[in-house]
Length: 208
Image (tube, rainbow, N blue to C red; front, top):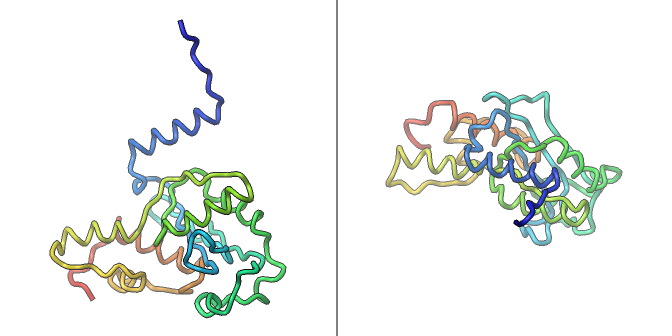
């Protein structure tokens, strides 16, 4: 008879977590973390992180008292092209957190909660690369893409319409105030409000 292999506790924990999210929709979680990054480029293979923003959704409400707003030491790749978008200059980032410490704080904040974002695949790819290189960690949290949720919900009402999935269009159509656009915390907060409108609020009767 073959002996049963005893898995380490952390392996069982990961297995149970994956099984749970196979059986439950991440959108239904009691707590969800909306995240956003400001980076030096839009290439996930080379982009460096400049700032990290995260806000907590609990019980269908945005909890602004529990948020993360971190600036990171300026990387060598910071150039004028990225500065024009996010307005973060080298002088603004001097003396801020080392990236490894910022990542540790992010992991502690998000725990095992599902992650919410806009273009979340990009942020997750950038985070995963840096987590692996600096901390030897993985980012296995379930993910919710707000633009996919918007497309799914709106397509039921407008099945023949080509939907504009740009960030500002989603915010305008869902009547979400955009504050601090192209800041990590501001965009994370706007995405959280989009999600709550799609999950709990009334959808627009016409597109704008």
